Image (tube, rainbow, N blue to C red; front, side):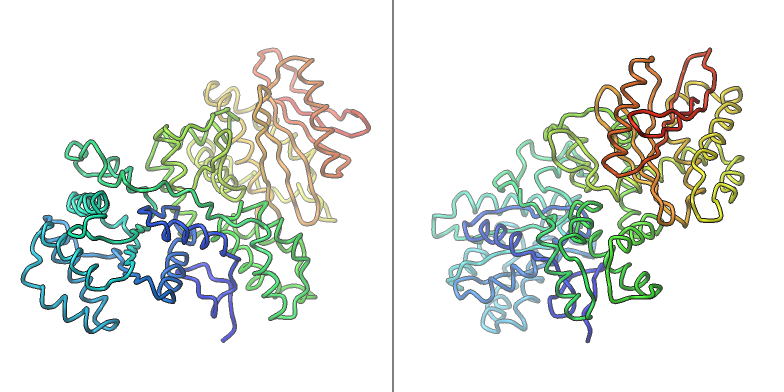
Length: 524
């Protein structure tokens, strides 16, 4: 069977093209070796299950270890009716695990069936089991989020904590290491409990080591996957360059990297004259496809924003308004955003990757358009913006937007226009380039709060800067910034869209030459 790029479920080296996860495995294994209890918590589709399954395989191959792998996904709600119910069902999971792996242990557990009725007797069973096995037993529990709303699960963690603290005493022999796998950090369960007032002040998982392994993949770790595919399929790939571009858009988020590659193989190469070569243009085309598709990863991203108003507002402030928000690990909204993969850790808060930036921008713009501007949407997609050679008449686009804003200014709420003007423009632009290109945004976080937009349309590139009018001196600085940005992208012409809140503005639109670059400036 041919290998493929996998974007659903667990990855297997014999079936799928995989990135080099040796660094992650090495660092996780080091925690296990040293007897740590920890939660491998990362967002959905971040390679958690693949990592833990590989760790389990490594443990099984080492004579001194015995991994016990359990999965709490899809468990019956009866598990959590009481501590006793949880104990009985957890014990049954242990029996099921050993039935086909070790008949002696299986028979031992069966003999204890009538005794395991409460957390105390489960604790004694753990000790008896560890002493009987005479190995370093590692407990690996995947999908613990299924349990995290329930107090019986916290009682189970409290039992593990008690045994961990007394683990040097023979009568409290316990697991060498415990690894819980899920989206949520178990130490923050008090935020998810159905009855938070019932939670213990001290978390039953406060013995756990912080999980600080970087699970995203760097370009060098993406390269082996591309090399293997190229060799297997006879496809020429400039591996370092393509890996860097994939990382540029994804920041190494495993699902996003694999999805971009899968799009290239399944949808883009089949339409090329020469499908035996991967190019940067193929990556760009894959990005264009991806930001317009519907998948469970993006659905989860949007759902998490919509379900937390404070998180939505914080993302808006950072992404749209260019707010400077220092990273604070103790801020609960920051923690929630990191947990869901919205933010990445930095000196300041940043959206995790450029794909997510685009998805969130598009969603916020669409939401703005749907709520306030839906009656104008049809005329936005006017094909006359595109010339016969497929170039985009960006001057015409900006003039049209200026006319639109001039009309809206007299009809819509002024305060709304002033706050939302960036999203209004993005909503205006989206149907014009839909299907033929895409736009990516870079917020310059400074007092200028400018938004640089790089629009690709067919094989052409357009550089646009969105700025607030703050006087002639700041305007000249904006021209300097834009010409520098044009030079970086090797583009001769650029565009400047200026939001001017003055009542007496002249609604200008003009070409200027600045430091050898041609810039079309429009005031709205």
